[in-house]
Image (cartoon, rainbow, N blue to C red; front, side, top):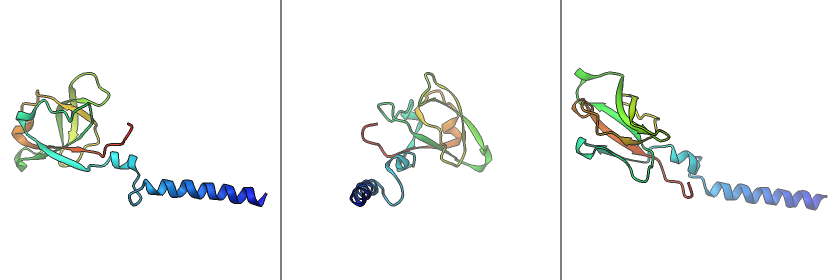
Length: 127
C-alpha cells in the first residue's frame, strides 16, 4: 500500500513539474493569449484592417485633442463570432476587451478625432 501511495505521489509530482514548465512566472499560455503582447498603429489607408486568417485583435483609441474627448465612441467592425460589420461601442484611452477580426472602411470620423491602435495576444499552438 505504501508503494502504491509513493508511486501516485511521484506521478503527481511529475505532472506538476511538467505543468510548471509551461508557465512564464505565474502566467499560463492561455492567459498570455488574452494579454496585449504586440501592437501597431492603424491609419485610415489601412482600412479595412484585419490581422489575417481571422485572428482577433483588441483596439485602443486615443483622442488627438482634448476638445473632442468622449468616454465611448462607436466603431464599425466585425466581432470574432459575428457575421456582419456592426457598430461597436469602445472605451476611449483604454484597451478594449472586444475581440475584433475586422475594422471597417466605414469609419469616417474615427481617424479625424482619434489615433487608433490594435493589440494582439500571444498565439497558442494548436488553437
